[in-house]
Length: 142
Image 1 (spheres, rainbow, N blue to C red):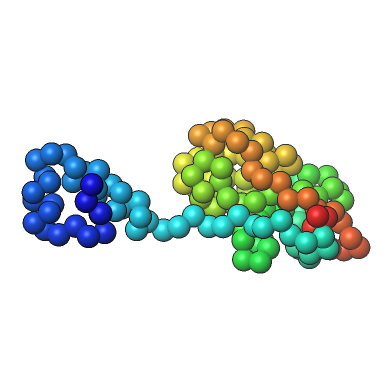
Image 2: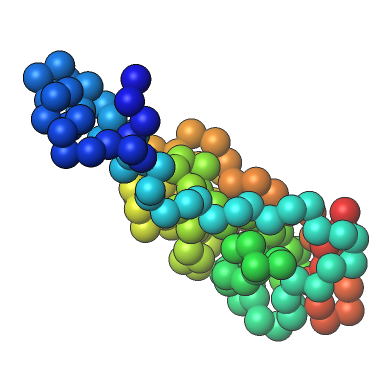
């Protein structure tokens, strides 16, 4: 099959009647689309993530670990959880919305306390990041 990156006008016109152009152009479009943000690597134990005071009780915030998007929630006073902010559906960045996380791309909704899917199209929960409270800071535990 013709490499989509090397298509010329003549090749497109020649292949046009076979339907191969549509497939080639689709592949070319996928290859040139923006890349999915990286999920955070497993942070080292003790990695500082956020101030406990910055995360409202019953709410959540967006932050990052080494540039990777992360969501942190405090379901009850002193109980904290963290998740990758990368949607398990198609890799969009999920946003905090109080006691849930919302994906702006396709409407998936996740529970901020568990990372579980409340409403799809996502089928898998958000990836959990083990965290704990250390003094007035939220830190990674593994």
